[in-house]
Length: 255
Ligand SMILES: [Zn+2]
Image (cartoon, rainbow, N blue to C red):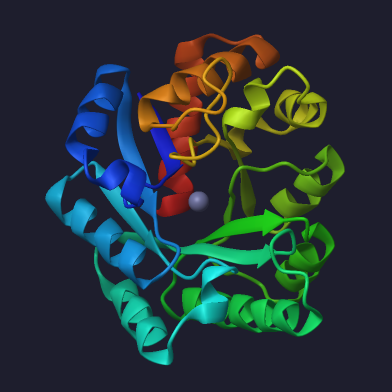
């Protein structure tokens, strides 16, 4: 049984055929999915999918790139969804300096990040972190703004030392398709060394398809490649990695 802790069945590439993708994933042993929002519409669809399927859960929130163009009314409608019983996390939120170079826009990202951390605490929810090329600022904010229910570092690509610091702050480390890439030296090192009870798996589909499907539209069933890679790196059985990461996901999401 696998828990895909970060998928975008709410994205246009997958939503139109979501039932098909869900069935193929279930056939490969994916038993639970966290569909993650990044703006109002995707958050709303995440909640709708969670209402339709009992094994789907939703995260709602504003991604650091999308938040810059969000209307106040859309932000409000998104945050109203936090009260829904199948919303188990606030996300994805964080900082993205890869796509945003302007200093004032980066400041705005920080403000929205902190505001959404406060909302997570008000609603007693964990958070899902998106961090791209902004590790130091992300860590600084998380250190200064304690998240009571902890959270998930989605598609973690940082160093082992930083992973250990984030675990100390209450975070789980989620690995996606990139850990299967041949040249992924650092992610493989992280998987080998972090405590197994802090490890999660995800696809981030439709993005980041694992090897040997790199470059194609990713879907939840492809998570098996990531699980297999982790099992090899940890010298454990696939079943054990599935079981441990599934239980870790339930724990952080309060299920
Ligand atoms: Zn995502």
